[in-house]
Amino acid sequence: MKVAFATTDGKKVDEHFGRAGMFVIYEVTPQEYKLVETRRFAEGRDRAIEETRDMGQVHENLVEAKVDKLADCKIIYITEIGGPSAARLARRGIMPVKVKKVIDIEEAIEELFNTLKTSPPPWLKKALQE
Image 1 (tube, one colour):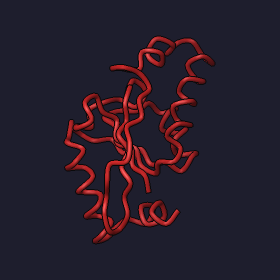
Image 2 (image 1 turned 90 degrees about the vertical axis):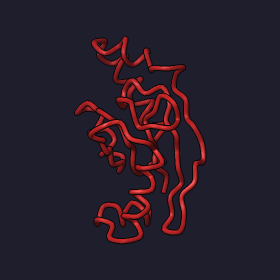
Image 3 (image 1 turned 135 degrees about the vertical axis):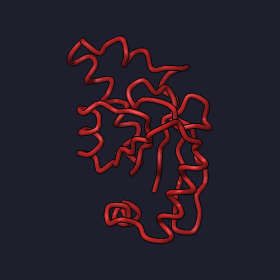
Image 4 (image 1 turned 60 degrees about the vertical axis):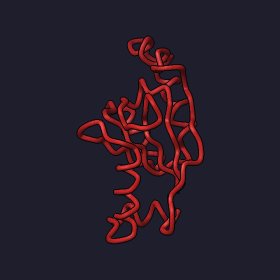
Protein backbone atom coordinates (compact mmCIF):
# COMPACT_ATOMS: atom_id res chain seq x y z
CA MET A 1 0.00 0.00 0.00
CA LYS A 2 1.14 3.55 -0.63
CA VAL A 3 1.44 6.08 2.18
CA ALA A 4 1.89 9.83 1.62
CA PHE A 5 3.50 12.38 3.94
CA ALA A 6 2.86 16.14 3.64
CA THR A 7 6.29 17.73 3.97
CA THR A 8 8.30 20.84 3.26
CA ASP A 9 11.70 19.14 3.27
CA GLY A 10 11.11 15.46 2.49
CA LYS A 11 12.20 14.52 6.01
CA LYS A 12 9.43 15.66 8.38
CA VAL A 13 5.64 15.55 8.46
CA ASP A 14 5.22 19.30 8.86
CA GLU A 15 2.53 20.56 6.52
CA HIS A 16 -1.23 21.10 6.20
CA PHE A 17 -2.92 19.04 3.48
CA GLY A 18 -4.17 21.96 1.40
CA ARG A 19 -1.05 24.07 1.41
CA ALA A 20 1.40 21.16 1.07
CA GLY A 21 3.45 21.65 -2.06
CA MET A 22 5.10 18.25 -1.71
CA PHE A 23 4.25 14.75 -0.55
CA VAL A 24 6.73 11.91 -0.24
CA ILE A 25 5.27 8.51 -1.04
CA TYR A 26 6.32 5.21 0.52
CA GLU A 27 5.31 1.71 -0.48
CA VAL A 28 4.58 -0.39 2.61
CA THR A 29 4.18 -4.16 2.71
CA PRO A 30 4.18 -6.53 5.69
CA GLN A 31 7.83 -7.29 4.86
CA GLU A 32 9.30 -3.85 4.14
CA TYR A 33 8.82 -0.19 3.34
CA LYS A 34 10.63 1.98 0.85
CA LEU A 35 10.51 5.49 -0.53
CA VAL A 36 9.11 5.32 -4.06
CA GLU A 37 8.61 8.93 -5.17
CA THR A 38 8.06 12.57 -4.39
CA ARG A 39 4.98 14.29 -5.77
CA ARG A 40 5.26 18.05 -6.15
CA PHE A 41 2.26 20.32 -6.42
CA ALA A 42 4.19 23.56 -6.07
CA GLU A 43 7.59 24.92 -5.12
CA GLY A 44 7.20 25.58 -1.42
CA ARG A 45 3.59 26.04 -0.32
CA ASP A 46 0.69 25.34 -2.65
CA ARG A 47 -0.28 28.98 -3.02
CA ALA A 48 -2.88 28.24 -5.71
CA ILE A 49 -5.01 26.43 -3.12
CA GLU A 50 -4.30 29.03 -0.43
CA GLU A 51 -5.11 32.01 -2.64
CA THR A 52 -8.39 30.57 -3.96
CA ARG A 53 -9.77 29.62 -0.56
CA ASP A 54 -12.83 31.89 -0.83
CA MET A 55 -13.37 31.39 -4.56
CA GLY A 56 -15.87 28.53 -4.45
CA GLN A 57 -15.63 26.13 -7.36
CA VAL A 58 -12.16 27.29 -8.43
CA HIS A 59 -10.82 26.28 -5.01
CA GLU A 60 -12.84 23.07 -4.95
CA ASN A 61 -11.42 22.03 -8.32
CA LEU A 62 -7.84 22.58 -7.16
CA VAL A 63 -8.39 20.55 -3.98
CA GLU A 64 -10.09 17.79 -5.96
CA ALA A 65 -7.15 17.69 -8.39
CA LYS A 66 -4.76 17.23 -5.44
CA VAL A 67 -6.90 14.41 -4.07
CA ASP A 68 -6.97 12.81 -7.54
CA LYS A 69 -3.17 12.84 -7.70
CA LEU A 70 -2.95 11.13 -4.30
CA ALA A 71 -5.82 8.67 -4.86
CA ASP A 72 -3.51 5.64 -5.03
CA CYS A 73 -2.41 6.25 -1.43
CA LYS A 74 -4.28 4.59 1.43
CA ILE A 75 -2.94 6.82 4.23
CA ILE A 76 -1.87 10.47 4.21
CA TYR A 77 0.00 11.95 7.16
CA ILE A 78 -0.50 15.71 7.70
CA THR A 79 -0.31 18.27 10.49
CA GLU A 80 -3.78 19.66 9.73
CA ILE A 81 -6.64 19.16 7.30
CA GLY A 82 -9.96 20.90 6.81
CA GLY A 83 -13.21 19.00 7.19
CA PRO A 84 -14.17 19.12 3.49
CA SER A 85 -10.75 17.81 2.42
CA ALA A 86 -10.84 15.05 5.04
CA ALA A 87 -14.28 14.03 3.75
CA ARG A 88 -12.97 13.96 0.17
CA LEU A 89 -10.14 11.64 1.21
CA ALA A 90 -12.48 9.40 3.19
CA ARG A 91 -14.82 9.04 0.21
CA ARG A 92 -11.83 7.75 -1.77
CA GLY A 93 -10.90 5.26 0.93
CA ILE A 94 -7.89 7.30 2.07
CA MET A 95 -7.26 7.66 5.79
CA PRO A 96 -5.96 11.11 6.82
CA VAL A 97 -3.68 10.83 9.86
CA LYS A 98 -3.08 14.08 11.75
CA VAL A 99 0.14 14.16 13.72
CA LYS A 100 0.05 16.06 17.00
CA LYS A 101 3.46 17.61 16.43
CA VAL A 102 6.02 17.75 13.66
CA ILE A 103 7.64 14.32 13.41
CA ASP A 104 10.29 12.67 11.26
CA ILE A 105 8.83 10.71 8.37
CA GLU A 106 11.20 7.86 9.21
CA GLU A 107 9.75 7.74 12.74
CA ALA A 108 6.16 7.75 11.43
CA ILE A 109 6.76 5.06 8.79
CA GLU A 110 8.63 2.86 11.28
CA GLU A 111 5.73 3.14 13.75
CA LEU A 112 3.22 2.27 11.00
CA PHE A 113 5.36 -0.66 9.86
CA ASN A 114 5.61 -2.02 13.41
CA THR A 115 1.84 -1.68 13.85
CA LEU A 116 1.33 -3.67 10.64
CA LYS A 117 3.59 -6.44 11.95
CA THR A 118 2.04 -6.63 15.42
CA SER A 119 -1.63 -5.72 15.74
CA PRO A 120 -3.04 -3.56 12.94
CA PRO A 121 -6.54 -2.18 13.47
CA PRO A 122 -9.21 -3.50 11.06
CA TRP A 123 -9.11 -0.44 8.77
CA LEU A 124 -5.36 -0.83 8.35
CA LYS A 125 -5.62 -4.56 7.58
CA LYS A 126 -8.21 -3.73 4.92
CA ALA A 127 -6.08 -0.97 3.40
CA LEU A 128 -3.11 -3.30 3.18
CA GLN A 129 -5.16 -5.98 1.40
CA GLU A 130 -6.58 -3.62 -1.24
